[in-house]
Image (cartoon, rainbow, N blue to C red; front, side, top):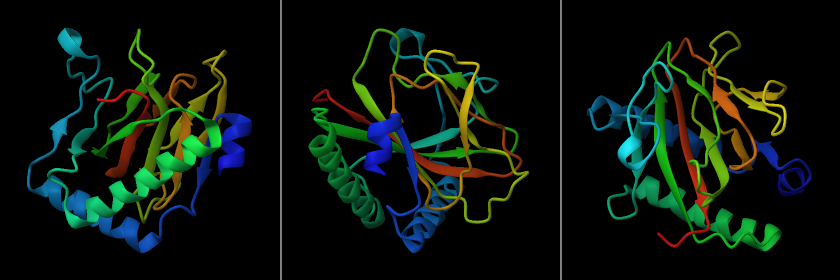
Length: 196
């Protein structure tokens, strides 16, 4: 995966996390959503932060080490190891990461966007772990990745299957989440080079 990331600035893998671990994360995501602790995702930041379901329709729950469950602690440990490997391989100066559960209800998607807010560059690598065990073609919900310098040219569509991981340069790739016909679960986040 790291060779692919070095060559293309994006990569996918099904080998980073055991399927059973991903199943447990999916169950935890569904349980927490049923408890009503997810929130409508926003776009923008600061004074311009707002929610627009027609642009971005997912519900999110941030994972914080101070309130993490044992399963979430295991995930955080794994991501810290991944952060160290990314630094060793690419000298990115990564200092931390931020992640959240994301649940897209049927009919929801996320229009084409870049992951760095305008005027900022702290997000270096986008991370997505998909948690959909019974995903099938026709369910929708693919991640569409576009060329950095020609954002109308599709590079790849990644199926959100259980255990698939996506990594890509946060500052380069316009991407969107296609509308899904089924609930679509993932853990999404960013490796960052700022301290806090």
